[in-house]
Image 1: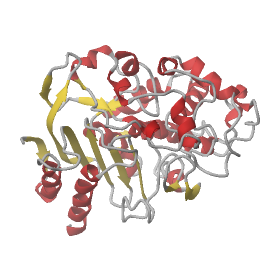
Image 2 (image 1 turned 180 degrees about the vertical axis):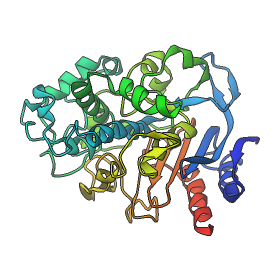
Image 3 (image 1 turned 90 degrees about the horizontal axis):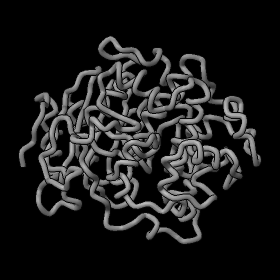
Image 4 (image 1 turned 60 degrees about the vertical axis):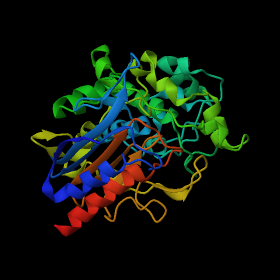
Length: 382
């Protein structure tokens, strides 16, 4: 397997761990992927390898500019957009959503705060009304249904993973405050200034570089209790991972699940968070702008995922159950099938893994974990 890109000698073990993912017999054996690490805003690891399948069904090498749907890793770009607005004084995490989105107050939601949306505590993990995947491409319909809906549980009392709905809720908040869609805001305020190849709503000019995801063997809806909240979430809409390989999905703004990028772009987007708000002359946040992330909102069994999760505002926080980082000021999130981003403020480091072959479940696997472990071992060695 040819591994391409650049890697600082200090982090050669990260490259080795990445290459090992492609060895025959690995479960899952990698097909195409990229890994990136930044320290002090500089890329110290930026490698890729394997193959993709493009829109014509042709297999091709994973290239430096290959991008792919990263599923819920998109949520962190949406969360960063919200952090930036809060840092500017345009948004208050502890204020009601209805203050900026009056229609949202319907059906007992007047007291739901923005922080509840960002920590999966709003009680809107899915749509009650039957909807299809095509309805996800209709922003007004998707958001108006959520605004009219009654919460599934008492908001603010527990987290229940908002797999797709979180992005629509955050995106509508951004639109009400700025007049821009969240994809427009991210492009203008984050990815554009940083030169990061990441898109919420991917334009036609990127199509030739997009690799298709390889869906897992099992639908998530097939492995949960039919009467559970998870089943309700997956029921509307019923969706397989193959939806991400379609043009309508790619063009739509799906801010919790539809972002397209690679490990380099994901790592670079979050590097300012790790470095006091600024990298390479681009400032996204003030020196304290990332502090709200570490305001713990809940640390308990999630009502949807089979996990005990520790949530800050917009990001997951390390815990005994999810020991993502040894650092106190570190945060993370991952995407369905295995993509991940870790932001470590103590180490001024970001780490990202993005791949096309999706593993089973929603909590990642060793493909992303082993290069991350190698990263921390390199940092500890100095």
